[in-house]
Every structure is written in structure tokens, then in C-alpha cells.
Image (tube, rainbow, N blue to C red; front, side, top):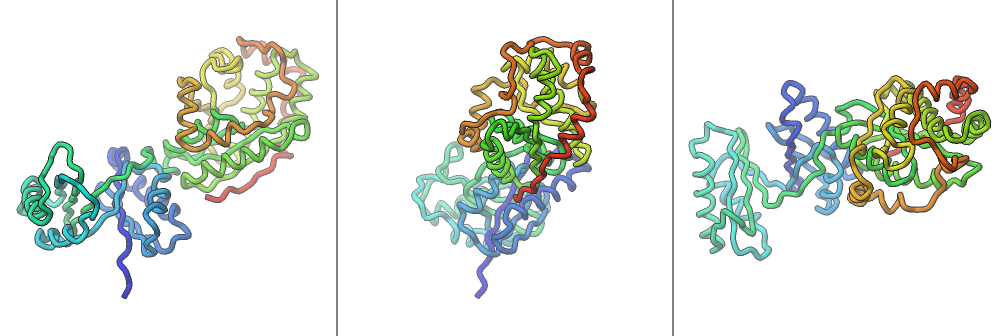
Length: 389
């Protein structure tokens, strides 16, 4: 006999506020959920009002289900759900069958009724079902702090019930907010910045600048590992490795040392903008945090950004290092980020970089550089790798 599938009810918060665009957000969420379970057999997603019902025919272990659902942005919470027809007596029998065998000293019934045509109100359903469970189990009702909460969702064509909510990552489904280019250095900050933009629904193309062969390949290995970790949040993406050493040597030989780091960053943004246009991305993400280092003063951030025409988004701008580290630990990128490597900006680094610069100064200094030629030669050597989910 064929076993019943595992049903999961998925709830969201922000998507429910999207008005006429709500179906677009819901369908993207369902696509991302189906992608999350690739390799685990047939997956069906059904859009119900205010929720999504997921059915897994293969019945994988719950830890596997929870791990995959926990990486789908747009989910407020999810739960292992059970179905009943819209009949209170049948519901009572189904609840009795599925009541957890674990020890619990008290319980509560929490009903949400979408079908207003059903003759009983939500409080009346709570009382009817609560009395039944109390008689069957001998446990008292505790509305304030129950050990077990039986959640009932009375819909127009069925009833769903579940016992334990699992928090999701929140945010918006990846893909609803367009595509951006994310600069990823291999340090702590940039993966967190990319994560936060993915959480706001952006697909991300990763771009890493390296100085090989003047530095080793450790940064490239780290960035590949970081990008794969971030790609678990339900997106297929690309990772560009951009060789930066020749451009750095040219800048170092033709410009004052104190301007060097700012000029490097202006070139990075120009290269990122070129890749963004190639990938049809709308913005560039950086891991800048205001005044964390000399290149991240308000003055220098402004002059760096003025080198390009598309928006530069800095999700970490108001966070301190402790807050960023806490987020990196939460998303499991921190252990990878703290592995040692040589950053490309350490190659030919000036001893005393300017903390204040102006566009006029930098444009004057850049007159001695073949900007277009440097960009074209560097982009021609860039490597692009497809990342699996």
C-alpha cells in the first residue's frame, strides 16, 4: 500500500502584504521550495490563502526536511501538518491519532478559521476540540503557557492541524528583487552582506578579485567554499575570478602611494559594473562598514562610488564588527572566513592611505592611467564558474 506523503504547511509574513504582486511572490516561493527538495523525490506545492502546502512523496527524515526548509527565504515558519475534511468529528479522530507520544503536562487549542460559512466560530472549535482532547488525555488546558499547542487551520475545503512550529529564515524569496553583483573577498564581512541581500530577494552573481601568482590560491579556494555555502539558500549562481595583480602593478607604478587603495577600489567597482551589465544585474553589493578601515570613511566611500553609474548597496554600513561576526556565525560562513589567506588589497598596499579623498583629486591622478585598456585586459582574463545549488 502506498504511504501518505509528508505534508508541510508553510507560512509567510511580508509576502502577505504585497497586494496585487502577491501571487508573483508566492509562486517564486513555491519554485524555491521545490528546488530545495531536488534529489528527494516528487515534491508538490499548493498555494492556499496565506500559506503554502508542501507534500513530499518520499517521506525523508524530518531533520533533512527542516534543514532544507530553513534555507528558503520568504518562510516565516513551517510545521509538519496533517489533514482532515471539514468535519469536527473526523478532525477529533485525526487529532487523537497524531497526538505526540512525548510527555506533556498541559495543552491548548489554537484555531484560525478561514471558512466563515462554517457554523462554529474559532473559540467554539477550540472549546469542542479542547474538551475532547482533555477527556482523551486527562491533561489540563493552559492557554497561557501550554506544553503542547494544537494549531488548527480551518480552510474552505479542508482542515490542517499541526503541533510544533519551526522558525524559517524570513525575508523574501530569492529571485523576486532582481539580480545584483556581490563582491566577495574571502573575509568575514562580504559574505554577510551578500546573505542579507539574498534575504531581501536578490539573486547574486559573485565576483572575487585575486592577485595570483603574487599571492597564493588560498583566497580562491575560500571564496569558492563561501559561495557554495551561500548558494545553499536556494539559488543557482556564477562566481567570477578576476585577476587583479597586473592592474595593481600598473596603478602602483603610475600614481602616488597614498591614493593607491582608493584607486584599487574604484577599479574594482568599474570591473564589477562591467560584469553587472554582462549579467543584467542592477547593482553592486559590498561589505563596507562605515569607518571600519581607512577606505571606508564617508569621504572615501563617496569618491569610490562615483567611479560607476549603477547603485552600490552596502547592507553592513551601520553595523559594528561584533554584529557582523555574530551574523557570520549564524549563517555558518565565519569558520570559513577566518581561515588564513592573502587578500588582493594587501598586495602593493600603501603604508599610509588617505582617509579623505575627493573625486577631483582622483580624476586628476587617473589621467596617467589607461582606464579603458586596463579594464578590457583584466576582464578578458576573468574566469566564470557556474555554482550548483
